[in-house]
Image 1 (cartoon, rainbow, N blue to C red):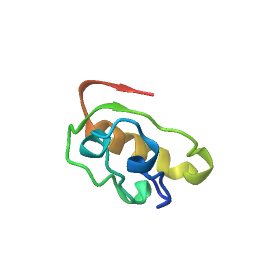
Image 2 (tube, one colour):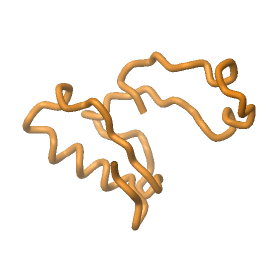
Image 3 (cartoon, rainbow, N blue to C red):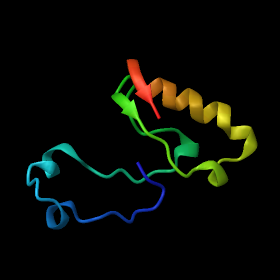
Image 4 (cartoon, helix red, strand yellow):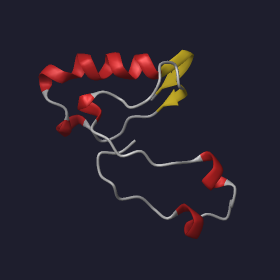
Length: 76
């Protein structure tokens, strides 16, 4: 998931041609809820969002992250 719809061309840059079957880009605003079903992910990695999250939205964001994580999933 990314707020910005600018992503590398996986078919062009990856030696792993099956990557297109496993990876897809999703463009959305995480402050409006994550566009994924409950318990969708085994691993969630969050990076470089501190300046984009208003102080009063952190609790809601972590609730959404928790919602989409499978039981026992890892969060980084």
